[in-house]
Length: 166
Image (cartoon, rainbow, N blue to C red; front, side):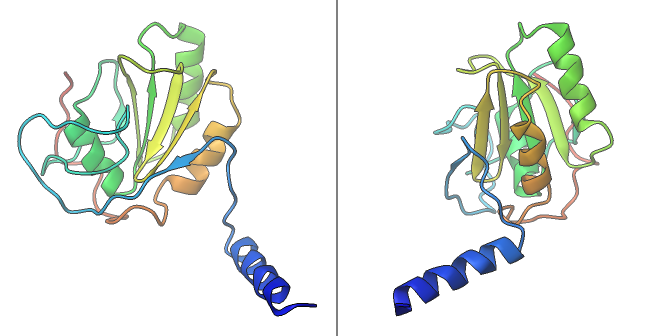
């Protein structure tokens, strides 16, 4: 066996040992945390997955109206997963998303205008867009990224700050 093969095998074993599974369709991005700003901000991704954000985080929970990106991004920095859906998504699928996040303390759920797919799951530095609330990858995304290692301030509060909507 070659040295390169042994090194590659060791790296694969290390990834498997720490439970790091790839989820088909997840896009990843690199952002540093801690950049607090005021006002309306522009983000590269829709919905955003990191970057500058408001100093107040969005309280985790289920919302019937759209959220301000700037507050939701701060929650992502704390380890939250933000599941967004098109405002015209049928009630049965919205109910399915509500059930998916039920009992989870670091999630946001809200409608979001302008999505290119019906549902998007966003975490700090990662995003998955799907055609249906029943896509099994949504649960896998939640399991991997809620309080996941990509969040710069994971474990910081997801309550007691901003609870308003647009």
